[in-house]
Image (cartoon, rainbow, N blue to C red; front, top):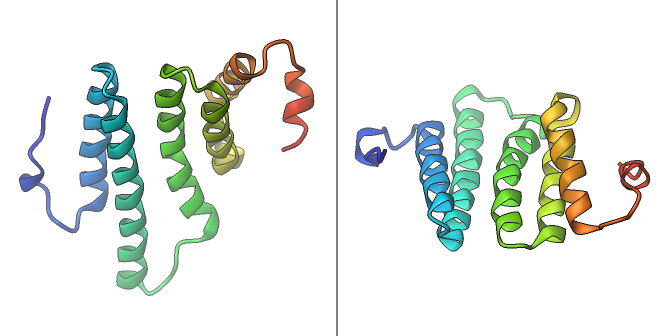
Length: 134
């Protein structure tokens, strides 16, 4: 389902990001990897604009943890794009950033994905040893 960006306020960066993220998912399903990649980076840019706008409106700044958590959330989708292309080592690096960015909020799903991506990138290597590095 396509949503027209003209119906979303220009300063609604999260709304625009949600639409772009949906478009990226559609592009990924259609195996349009370059387009999906581009759209996900537009999401990252819109997230940064959201943080900047709130900082100017409220007069406070987003903490580093909040900014990284928001930015790194896109890396899970970037990892999927790379994995679909067989770029397992690069996909793993994006997933690690996502995992670290989520910090204490990293759930069971991201942990399972991390192990699966590691096994694709480094068949037969010790995942637990790898995970001790972070």
